[in-house]
Length: 154
Image 1 (cartoon, rainbow, N blue to C red):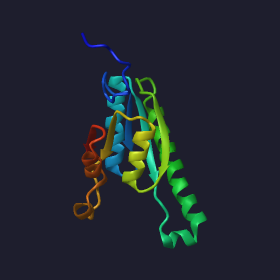
Image 2 (image 1 turned 120 degrees about the vertical axis):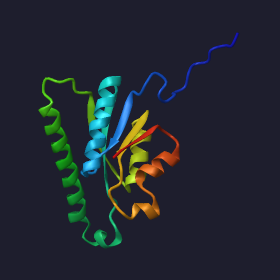
Image 3 (image 1 turned 90 degrees about the vertical axis):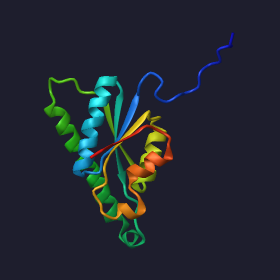
Image 4 (image 1 turned 45 degrees about the vertical axis):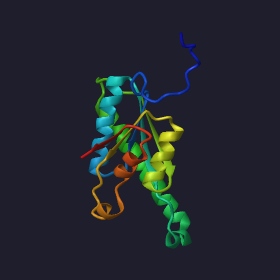
């Protein structure tokens, strides 16, 4: 007979409890949030919608205050739009959700968010930028990290 030791945290053992969805305002990221909301609703999981505020470049750092204010304004606008979308679903079962902002590049910001929120799954939209074929998209990098199940929504 094997002695049972106290179980340490294990992702996804009884289905996801926290699903992180990346939101940057693009159409594919909104589709990712909608898809993640459906998953969260069906699994009775928490939907953590994450916007990653970009780091300031050297040029933007010279006028840092306006650049920081601009990224914070984007975060407020995305959260307001998300709240309006939830309100339009009045009467329907809406999953528990939270809106979070993290700073950094999109990949590292989502990794930090998933780690801090103890995510069981990550959902992102497919990249809509042409340059990602050369340097790799955030979605591909998340999949390659191999730390969570990652769903890429077109």
